[in-house]
Length: 221
Length: 341
Ligand SMILES: [Zn+2]
Image (cartoon, rainbow over all chains, first blue to last red; front, side, top):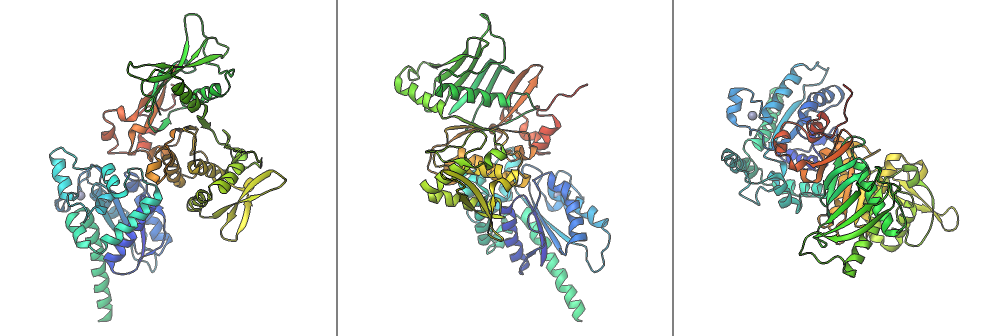
């Protein structure tokens, strides 16, 4: 599948390529490698332009975006019924995507690109601890933040993942690759421990597959 | 390691205190004292090497005033300060080591004094200049990188001869930074003279240093310092991001951290204390996880002051909604030029 990944670094891109390919159960071809956004709020600001570029200039069928939540509101299924919760980065990105997709010009022979968004709570290193530290989960984070505590910090998670909170890009990419390979064999646990942020990504990608399957069945019949 | 530097009447630093970590990034407008800090360190180094060297304090000195730059040391010289004091406006000054806490080792002891003097003499301040980096050089024993980056060919040549595995690691890292090139090569245009070239991977063509882009040369100089087997113990770097593509800044950060936190990069050597300056919000952004490493230089009237970003109590809250680079650019963190009103 022809995809683009918008991440903060080569390390994020490496990990997401592995995870997404496993979820979709097919190889991922990056149509535009090395798309970068420098974290929040840049990712929100640049997203419309990235979507337009992918639609008008590339053959990308979809875009994957993952942002760190840091200490922002964590997405919750109730947000979907309430509509858009502006302090939730996932809701905010979905709003931007919806608005951008609505205003795209149609291009002959091209479907509107799909966009799947994930929210790493509080940062992607938390996902890399999945299966290694049962105390690193969305539930633990949300409960602690309700109590006004930080159960862990991103710098602490980085130390646990890389052995330092100042990893080189090489080390970061290597570890991201290893952890994504490990997690790709245990996606259920990752979804169970990160049901909102990773769950949103995996559910969106599953819906792409269902749509693709039903489209191919329709065309066969 | 220097814990803090206190300035009294030194140029624009009339009464300023600069807290330092193993790595410190100084941001602020022109004339806010960033370069003055590095100038003071360079002056102190020269004094330690050449007792007759002078450095003007940039302010009139009378019998009622004085100028002082005081380096307060951390481990292993905790409780000791090195004091540079100016006696006249002509720039002559003296350096002494004094005890500032009662339980410190008496600095008069010769071994400590000698260690501190040697430490001061090995301070290095770099402000790289691309044509100097590219210049061919005469080989000398124990070649070191000059302040402007000249001598790089000799330093690389020495690294290849003395620590070939490090030279190879540097080549690999260079290829990661700049995938266009895959190896550093040398040429001997005349006896005892070296120049370097970078081999273009695609067609294996060696590109002479003088034909390389400014950004490539500056990046190579930064990379080389971080791979030296025994770098200077204290390094000041003027705008290590200058001329470098924003996407490469993460690699520049890695090079700076490799110097300051060798243990995080699998290095066995002693840490280098690094003081760098920048004007780039992109560069600043990369240090967001460590606000204790960022010092904002502020110009108030004719004076400059420093404050550590981490000392601002609301910093985490402010950075929830925006990036550090943008917050700095907006002016809410200080350290921006004054505008005519
Ligand atoms: Zn939400």
